[in-house]
Image 1 (cartoon, helix red, strand yellow):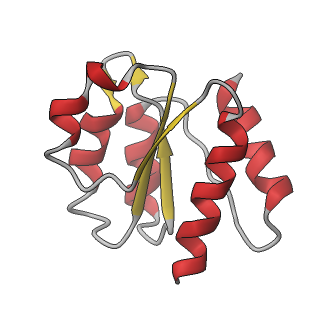
Image 2 (tube, helix red, strand yellow; image 1 turned 120 degrees about the vertical axis):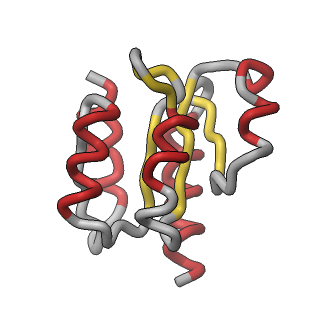
Length: 113
């Protein structure tokens, strides 16, 4: 499952980062509502009843200082116009070294802090 692979990859890449996972938008919102102290949220674009941009809009008011990364295989043109209406930190494509680019993106977020 992709969530487990991303979680494991991040866990193995960082010593001081805790990873909390959810496999649905509803589950993610529940996790975020339990603890609003996340440094970064990583979401796929395609998630069934909602997409990653919908999730961003729902959690951004609750977590204004939390970086948001869209990690997706969707082509950017599918969501480009909607993306411009957000403050999503990064869009990382899953293909062709996507995990390494994701780690670089997370690292750059935590390096800023």
